[in-house]
Amino acid sequence: MFRNLFAVFIFFIAISCKQKNSKAAVDPQESIVVSEFYQEPYRPQFHFSPPEKWMNDPNGLVYHQGVYHLFYQYYPEDIVWGPMHWGHATSKDMIHWEHKPIALYPDEHGLIFSGSVVVDHQNSSGFGSKEHPPLVAIFTYHDMDAERAGRLDYQTQGIAYSLDNGETWTKYEDNPVISNDGIKDFRDPKVFWHEKSSRWILSLVAGDHARFYASSNLKKWELLSEFGKEVGAHGGVWECPDLFPLKVNGTDEEKWVLLISINPGAPNGGSGTQYFIGDFDGNTFTTSQTDLRWIDYGMDNYAGVTYNNVPNNDRIFIGWMSNWNYARDTPTQVWRSAMTLPRKLSLEKDASGYILKNYPLSSFEALKSPEEVLNTISLSEPFQLTLDNLMQNEISFEADLSKELTVVLGNDSEKVSLHINPVEKRLEFDRSRSGIVNFEESFGNKIQTQPYLPVTSLSEVRIIIDQSSMEIFIDKGKYVFTNQIFPTKPYSQLTLQGDAKELTQVKLFKINSIWNEK
Image (tube, rainbow, N blue to C red; front, side, top):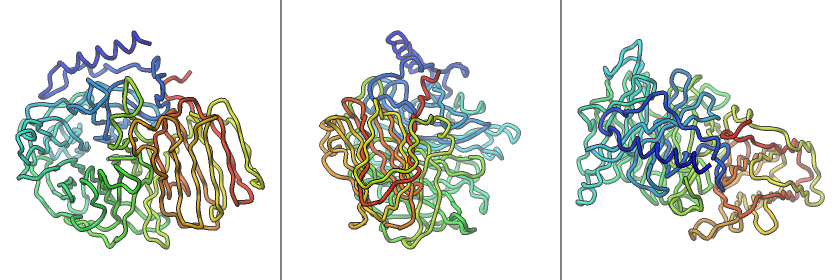
């Protein structure tokens, strides 16, 4: 174990000393084998995490030639935030991941902050050809020297291209392609091709609002419009915008969705991602939405964005499973932080308006092995189940959630609880006694809540537990809590109790590791 870990460490040191200004000078076939040592305490077994060191925002999510790319904010020298690079991993099924060498390094323009990747099918950039279209990355440069000097123009936007499906990258010689006229927090470009206007559209954030730009070639950009100065949550800086269309389920109606991450200012503290439903005419995004809407009410789903160029126009979302309140302090060693499960986004409309649902991809089912199939259980008295280890499992059931219900998972001294409270019209999640919680005050000092509209029909409750996380999906992702947990020993006890007469379709699955499959 230690020999392999040392080898990976030497690998990162070696590549960090290579060419940093244009193309990553690495063997395109080189990858990192990690399966022998992904066994550290709290190491996720079916969520993506880097082999070692610090990771935050997902970047450059794109599908091309049968490969899903995941780039991410990465610091290869420590387990706390530092000079940002783009780490890289690939997958063919959105379940198993292959670690790749670092894709983008800091250069004379600055560190490499968040951004996106597109497939330039028409070769509008001229970097490739129509027969062999390039991948083009659009990212934020962060000039630390300019920031230290007190300037406000320390963030600009640059591009790079790849002609070998993301294995190596060349930075554009005339970077930056979008300069900064004195705006602090000017970052996180997300780009897509807009069919109706036949041009590229770029969204980025400028402190307290979003800006939209257009380009015919990904090199020269024109400012179109702004959105959000007086709309939405403004408890902190806006980050990581993502604009895309979605059909309303079961209809031909199409709406546009704008994701905006915000830190601080989330409903349960620290970092969170809000969304707006509206319309985009190729120049301007508008919405009649007046209330605040959040993609997840847990404390650990931030900076999430969606994939470009996905088959069937599916909208696949991944978030960073942490919170800036305590991201640097979580009790892990070797590596720090993971991504959420990949989720498919869908749009529904009910009495409260448009609802953006997020739910695990169906491909996740391949990791599940039946452990207990209980079918129907009565709640005339509390139901209890004890197993050796519940830290790599999924629990699901259906119930009438117009009745009060409590789900508790724990061990002899630690627990987490989900409380469905239809009388107060809210859902509650409590991790105050979940295990190690004292590394930062806000991690476990409050009960997390979200608004809940009870319905009398049966609704699904799905709880997915990894070694240091819990993702809860209610009513197929209409209500979501994503949270980290750090128990001192595995949870082994499940308790269900409440006013509902019975639970149906009760199932317990073991989730196989993606790193140590036999």
